[in-house]
Image 1 (cartoon, rainbow, N blue to C red):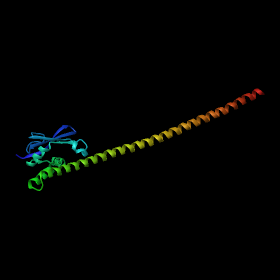
Image 2 (image 1 turned 180 degrees about the vertical axis):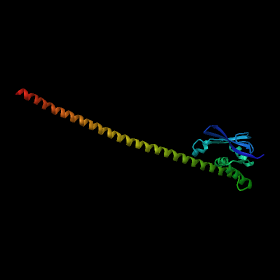
Image 3 (image 1 turned 90 degrees about the vertical axis):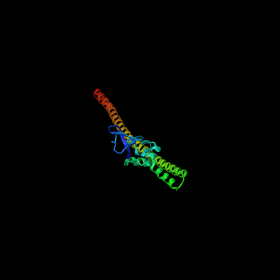
Length: 186
């Protein structure tokens, strides 16, 4: 029996969710399977791959070592998770190139380096988001200052027009009183 490691689709329309399964090569995509070894959610941010894949590492390694052929997508997932690296390191142990402890140290170093890279990406993304928010806030403050300046100018113009009108009314009032008194004096 030829076995495949493949994705089995689940989830609703336009929101796919996959199970990573071991199945007979002749079985349909969403059909019968031998074992479920993990899940994959492609709907989250690809920079946080560790959060999108839930994998039983030991079972995946077992099936890869026994000759199960993964599909292209599953091969990429297993490679990112380090299954193929561990298979390679175990091959080196079998050949006597190094011992099991050295292989585990190499794998742990790779895993730590990978985690550091993911953390740097997450930090850079958070910094970019923070910088974009700060830039947007600065633009909004500048726009608000311009609006406030225009409003202040408009109010000042209205106040000047009102004062001018009052001054003109005050100037006309004594002239009218003088004009009213002048005919009465005649």
